[in-house]
Image 1 (cartoon, each protein chain N blue to C red):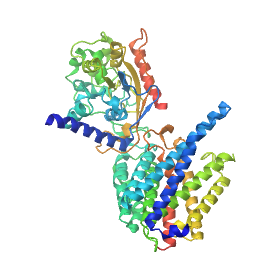
Image 2: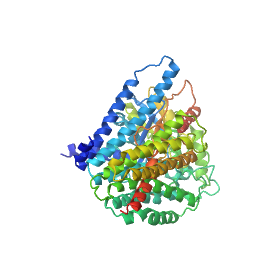
Image 3: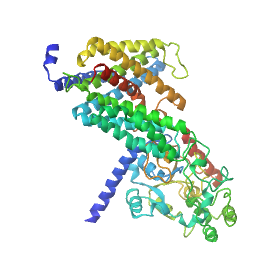
Length: 301
Length: 329
């Protein structure tokens, strides 16, 4: 009996959720560079809120929704049974780990603009009047855990958690500083072996699904997306036949700022741009910058 | 003909009205459809002609949508009509807020506006508590919103942010709520026909806006306030008001008004509506956008709704209160 009921419940929840999302945000999809098409794709988008996942899921047409798997951070989306159920059954998401990187959390903070007063991360302190500022995750105790992070193939790792590869962590505790410098130096081959955080994504792509990733790794705090992590490049070189579609998710951070539980109705849209591809012999960094530019360009469309 | 219409019950009269309106729409839409086959010899002219036609077809689509909404609202009774207008107000406010910058500190005030103020206002309409309904937003809410904002502990641009939110509530919720309120006005000897009053208001206001739009397009006059609106000038405005008011006066037989009264309320409604349209244009210019729809693309339907209803939002309260005051209802 439950075998019949469970999928129906998931379907029903999906419809309900879709209705709510549309009522609140419109969940408008704007296909500019490419039509919605059932080919294998990697959608990569800017990341401003946990609700990004829901937005892009709701914006895709029904037919694509079933073959497209979004990426969900396990530490957020699997921390209650209900969230876990909804991400696996309704969104059909792929979990990625990022809990292990908690110690590096401060690096997710904006390095350049806020350097002088890093502890104050309240919205009130921010200068720009136009944007809502989702404040950063609370800083976690950071002393002991530095070494493990360096061990595990940083290359792939930082894509998923998106914390290591930033220019310079702001005011940071001594251990964090060297840590942040190391990963770019170590750079192993793109194809990362065992204990690879990209493994679930690779598996999803191998089985023919499309995926949605957020190459910034962490949620941005201003309108400008952060630097892209290299996972996108890794996946793109591993699966050259998969089409890479940039997407810009607009306004979601205003719907539900961090710490609030009731969303506010504000129109949001997802703009899909023209596909890009890794050119012959293109290096990792130029490609990632180009991908980021492609995403940003969609803001003005 | 007239005798026959008068012999019908109010319900049949309203039904006949909808029948006529749907008939007209079918005729116009069919004509527009066949016009698309017409080809101009000059390809440049042809493109322009097709674009113009597409523009009118879009307007027609909106008209169809609105008429169907009204029809459904009327057919299913006053409560459903009120809920429908509440939904329209909700979508309009959503658009308004989307394009006004908000900060994190506004979150609670926004929740208050959308999920508390809006339902209460329309509930007051549905239950015909007119004394409270007219003061609920200007008195209670306008004091409550800044309090919610102040409690959010964010002083920057405080007045600006609150003014925007209050203005949004005033236009989208307060203004819109007066349209279903017309359904509940009880003119002596006019029971069951209030739907005509709503139709009258919408029809007259939309006519004035449309006529004004067409005239200013045809006669390229110098705009009076070019920074706000490139099409607004007193001549076409005046023509719009006169035409729409005369049309309104001709339709006085569907209202409880006499010819002169219908003319007067039409003038009032048209002036309020067209000026409201202008005010909303100023707001849009300030936000740097040509219309409320997101960059001209409306796939989900609700976009650009505010463009269509802003005149109504300004005309409805003035229309409502002036007739309520004059007829002592």
